[in-house]
Image (cartoon, helix red, strand yellow):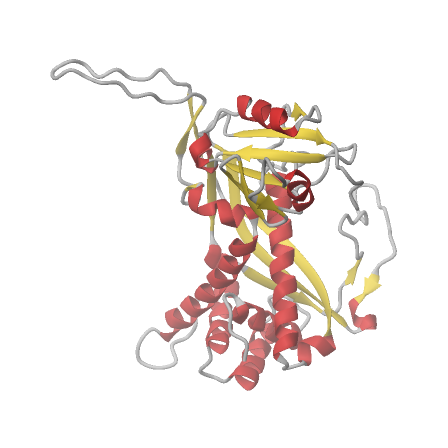
Length: 366
């Protein structure tokens, strides 16, 4: 049986998808437990997590099975499984790879946002210590929900072949990565209050490329107010391939290094309105971040009707805009969703700069 970080969460999602199409119902939860027991064994981590999910969804304690707090053990198993899936997401996501360097904070905890850099000074014994004049504001972060949705067939879910589980796992992880990274990087994401954080590039005045990349990189650095010794460059893999060569031999489709700055490649950074590439220079220590990995949730449905587009336009209000929908029941498909909980905001002005208008040497595919 394939074993990798986060796979047990995908197996729990498979069991839940097979059990019922009614999210959060007792039949879905008990059915997932039964299927987990039959497919992976009653003592497996998946089955323990399935029992713990009841506590997570119903917000109640799982009844003790014997002496000792087994309910807490099962709830912990679910949270551990959820954290492992979040860790799998982190391995592939730009925001996940930056995470060790971000200013990580507990949710709802007040912190100070600085609009200027602090400085230090040498002090003579007995002399007063100078205080840097800075502009501060108090802020806090609450976790917001990121919904990632895939559609798969019942036949793939029923298959106990390792390759089927890996395929579903990869799709769930990929969808979660794309949802987080697009929101984090896309300059057009202005955010929605209490729903979605705005991107770290939204509202920035970009440096417009001139066609001389080396000179443009220097201009991007000139517009940057963060710490270059902690900074990262982020761009599409196609751009890193384009600039790789004699001057920047250490960068390519999977990132690398540009002028000594670590480079992260991401397809989640969209091209600008003219189809030209963008590049971000970012100091993660100037970005506040919070997450609740253990609260990661699974959603499933067999009966829903979906508009199978990345930018759905179907709406029931305020102005109905009906579109052609695909019935999951009629097509023998199942929708599987993952809800992750995270949030971010720039905590120090100047920590991000943006360059746009980098013309591709070959017209991009999208």
